[in-house]
Structures are given as structure tokens and as C-alpha cells.
Length: 237
Image (cartoon, rainbow, N blue to C red; front, side, top):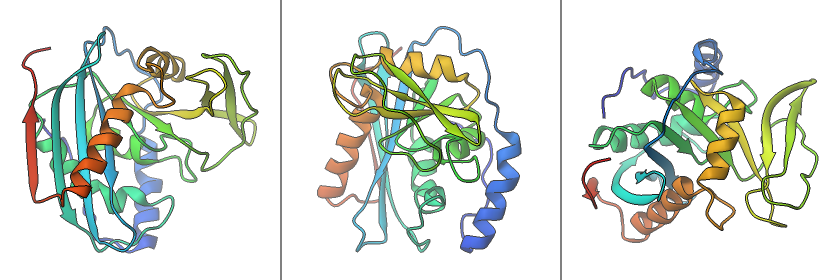
């Protein structure tokens, strides 16, 4: 996959926060994705005692959600673990993993925030701008804002509010299970993002793209990572 733009990642935390303020102005919170035939999930895994980041991207064919490609990259980082600045820790490894992809996904799910972020630029939005692709943030907890508990039924939603503005949705992907927190990453409308999360949630709390990425990232970490690898399980879209 082509990476449209790369900025330096070897920044101080203050420099990183200033860059986020600049990049947030380039996030698009609308866009027509059209028919989705290939989705991808991206995640990173590491231990807090290690500076090695294991990033993965998993591509799935729609609508059956069969995994067609998995890629990984393991890179050492010097950027500290700071909530709100995780892209600067995980980003270089994720970019290397995306570079190795043969697939061209129509939309990419990230295990993390989109615009529901203190500076409006979570990892899904940040990577969306760099990749120039439609992206969705699917987080397991809130970073900013508040949301009422959705009703217990699958598909129930509740807005994530910050200063009276809706910045995402709490989405119940499985009956009586904790919701996930969905926010726009880049080039997609919130309603479409919620629909795609529900369409790809198949009996688990996490939608299948990020669930498969989470599982694969943990496998790569437990196996010791390595520089990078690529597994193509099936060809075509």
C-alpha cells in the first residue's frame, strides 16, 4: 500500500502535541465510501517494559469477513507511553506494516480513537490523514467526552458528547455487553462508521477487523516479533 505522506516521529511530547493541532485541520469528517468489498483492521501490541512495538494490519473480504491478508512489523521506539500521543509511539511500526500490504482496503478500522480525542486527532484520524484513506476509530474506553449507557439490545447507540458536540457514538455490538466507542477517523461520516462497525461485528464485542488485528498482534508479540512478515491467505477481493 502506498503511504501518501510521512512526517518525522522523533519529536518531543510538546512538539508532537503541536503537530496534532496542525494535522487535525486536515481531518475530513464526511465522505462517500461507496460499496465496501475489503476492510482492514490495525492494532499494535507491546509490553510496558519493552520499547519494541509489534504492529499488524489484517485485511478481510466483505461480506463474509474471510481474512485474506495479514502483515506485521516490529520496530523499536524511543517515544514514551503517553495517553493521547500513542500514534507517535505506534505510528512508525504501523506505517511499516501498511507498506507491506498488497491489499487496498476500502476502509480501515483502528483499535483506538478517531476525533474523540483531546486534540481531535486520535490514531484513526492521524493515520487516516497520512494514508489518505477512510478510517474509523473503535475504542474500548472513552478518552474525552461523556456518553450515556446505550440500551441493552444489539445496535443500540448513545452519543459521545463534548461541550455539547457529538464527537462519536457508544455502540452496543452485542446484547448486554459493554459498548465500544466509535468515532470518525477520516473521510467517513459518523452514521456510516457506526453502520460498518455493526455490519462487521459477528458475535463479539469488537468488530471483526479490529478483533482479528488484536488477536494477530498478540500472536506476533508472543512469538517475538522480528523485523516484519507478510502472510497472504487468499488472493483477490
